[in-house]
Length: 76
Image 1 (cartoon, rainbow, N blue to C red):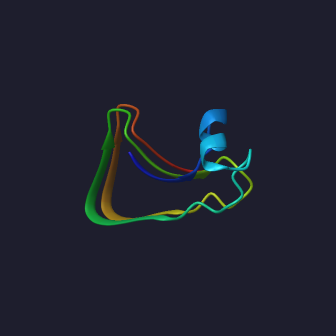
Image 2 (cartoon, rainbow, N blue to C red):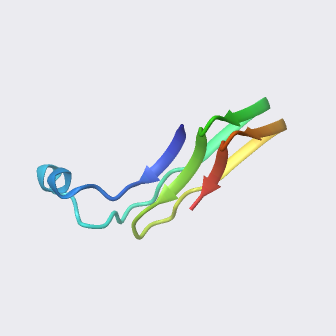
């Protein structure tokens, strides 16, 4: 998995690190430059935010992209 994310954390983790109930920051961007990108067998390339901020962008520059067997690319 290649990911940039702002995730919701469980209650114990939030208490230990004094985190707010909902993430408020922005997730980063994912940038991939390659001749061939293969994402397979459930692997994911993703940028997402489960809170209030920007989910980030996925920028892929490739001559070919192959998604196989539940591989995916998402930006949420």
